[in-house]
Image 1 (cartoon, rainbow, N blue to C red):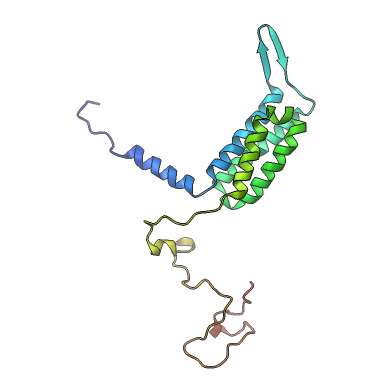
Image 2 (tube, rainbow, N blue to C red; image 1 turned 30 degrees about the vertical axis):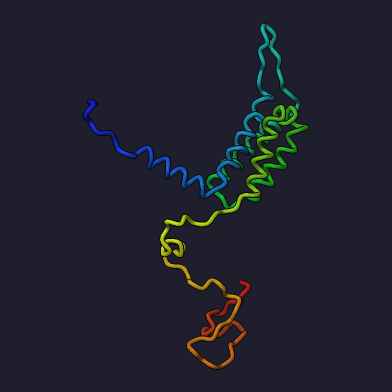
Amino acid sequence: MSAETPAATGQFTVRRQQFRAWRGERPFWAGMFVLLGGLPIAYFPYANLQIGHLTLAMATTAGAGSLIIGVLLVVLGVSLWFQKHVRVFAGVAAILLALVSLPVSNIGGFLIGFLLALVGGAMAVAWAPGAPPAGQPAAMASTGMGGTPGATDHDTTVLKAVDGADEPNDLSGTNPANGANGRHSAG
C-alpha cells in the first residue's frame, strides 16, 4: 500500500456510529456491569495467589456454587445485550445472585463482583427505552413487524362511530363494524 492509496474514508466512523446506535437501544452498560461482576465471583474461588514463595489458595467449600453464580451472571449480562425485553427479570436475578454470592463466594468476589453485579442489576431494572431519534422519518417509526405499516390509532379501548353511522356501538365485541372483530378490548 503506497502513501497515495486512499484509505476507506469513514469506515471506522460508520462502524462506531452503528455500534453507538446498537448500544443506545438496549441496557448495554447494565449488561457490562453484570457480566464483569460474574467474572471475579467465578474466578477467585479457583485462583491461587503467589506472595513470594508462598502460595495462597482461596478455594472455598462452595467452589461449585461460586462457579454457577458467576456463569449465571455472565449469561444474564449477555442476555441484557441481546434480549432487552428481559431486562427486569435479568436485573432482579442479578441482584439476587449478587446477594447470594456474599456468603458463597469469598464475600462476593472480594466485594468487586458483588458491587459490579449489584449496580448492573439496578441499572437493568431502571433502564427504559428512549424515544426514536429525531432524524428518523415518521414512516419508519410507525412500521410494525416485517416492515408493514402499523395502525395509526393505537387506542382500542374507546369505541368510535364507524362511517358516520348514527346507530349505537355494539358492545358485544362480535360486530366487525366496530373494529373488534370478535375480540374483547382487553385481549
